[in-house]
Length: 135
Image 1 (cartoon, rainbow, N blue to C red):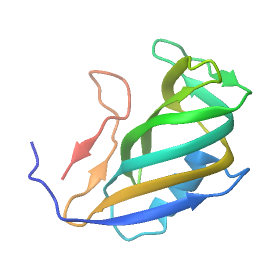
Image 2: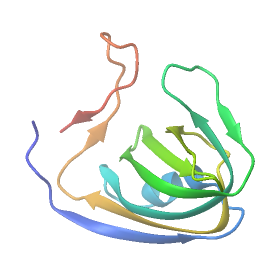
Image 3: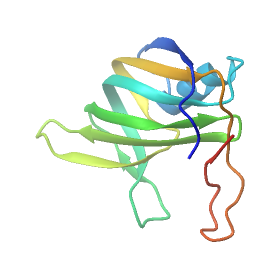
């Protein structure tokens, strides 16, 4: 286990039509830190592309959605982000956040940037996936 790192925070307000995943990744990549995580997120989407657990294909939701939760880690090798959204009936859907999640009215995102840690994502032979390594 790595020791807790020092951090600073980056606050974003995303506008209608912006892609949630792309905006978070672009904001992180513009900073000098090599480790980060989503500290807070709230907002709405007009459409969402999510890959639920155990599926290889994306689930497309094309309706107004509230962001109930967004969490994950950010590294120079890419992001690992999970989202939960609720529709007008309050039904929740969640999974891996994919590109194609358009902001409906706004999204308020706070990213914690860790100043003395480095995250990377090499392929893990045990899982076959690019998994988090903390230095």
